[in-house]
Length: 337
Image 1 (spheres, rainbow, N blue to C red):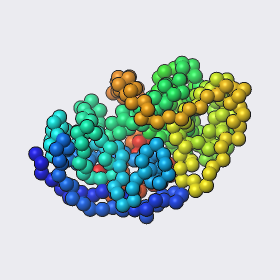
Image 2: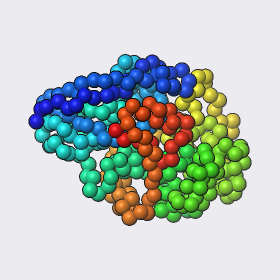
Image 3: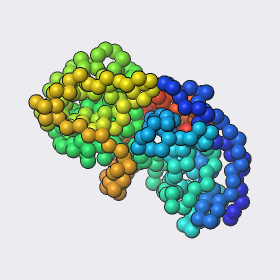
Image 4: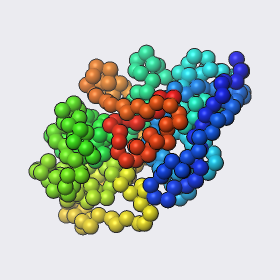
């Protein structure tokens, strides 16, 4: 089958942001869905992923991922249904995971689309708890931070898609204490009452260092950093001997227009023998089979709880992204196309 799909909509980068992005940085364009060529399929996207790392790609600065081009459609994780195919192994009706989000329709190469089983888990789960955020949490906690049973774990941005998984995985593996920070009283309640965190605090209620010391009086062995800035400095102050820090993200600094000061207490790395390592999930794709084997059953039987913040409509995607950067989501931020 080679017919074109319906008319399509795509979200383009209209201009690069200076500081916090605004709606003016996006362009919504009506386009033709196009036709798949040899080895390609036309996919009608049903779910789009919205992630903090996308802020970095809006900038022209050199980074680990190529920047979005001004005037071109943005990209990101997506799940959709094959509606036309010229590719072996991809049939009309298949549900696939790919990286051409921010649009209603995508022409994908067969090598860049992975079929998923929506009978074992809902399609959007493959963008969150069983997708890139879940693998990020798993690899960062176990392979980067070298979590061991009995460790006390602190995770910032704990109510997000990655942070909420980190805390639950640590509890299931025998953490002595799991502490999370979040940006609202409702998120704090969710972490402690529904996800099983031992303690959580609203970082807006007072100095992070003071709140962390109160929540972890015996110190912290592992810090999973999604926020940076004040949170990182506080975590260093509460680190126990031999503490490990996994740097996943620093969302507090993504919109900064000037260089940000580093932690003022780095000297503690010496006496405490702290190690700190940044990582990218793309360096740990070999862990995916292990991750799926271990985590999918836990999701299936309800041992791992996850939340999704769903925004409807492709034209709402830019606002969903702005809301994500402002911390408006609980769990994974998704756009239902």
